[in-house]
Length: 83
Ligand code: SF4
Image 1 (tube, rainbow, N blue to C red):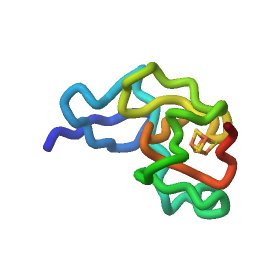
Image 2 (image 1 turned 180 degrees about the vertical axis):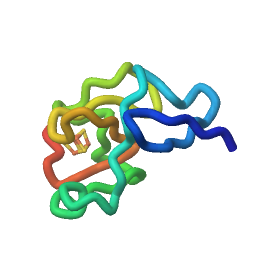
Image 3 (image 1 turned 60 degrees about the vertical axis):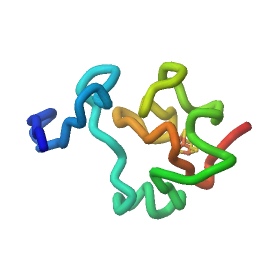
Image 4 (image 1 turned 90 degrees about the vertical axis):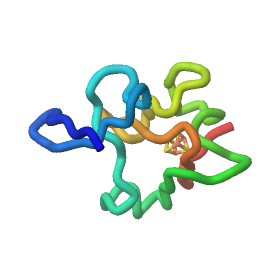
């Protein structure tokens, strides 16, 4: 596995999965993520079809307006999902 330091933290880099800069991924165990029920992989309602998501179409991850400064999984979900 490849690792890279970004913003003072160590992050895993999976080939081309790293997209749109060096933003950290939201950890499901972060307090804000827990409070919103964020999960990084679910079906049906997903981050990629949420109006708070601004990642590139077809990308594995991207920015979310709720989690400022971090990326969420395109296949993720949280209770703030907006159609
Ligand atoms: Fe995903 Fe929730 Fe952000 Fe929508 S608000 S993109 S469901 S983390």
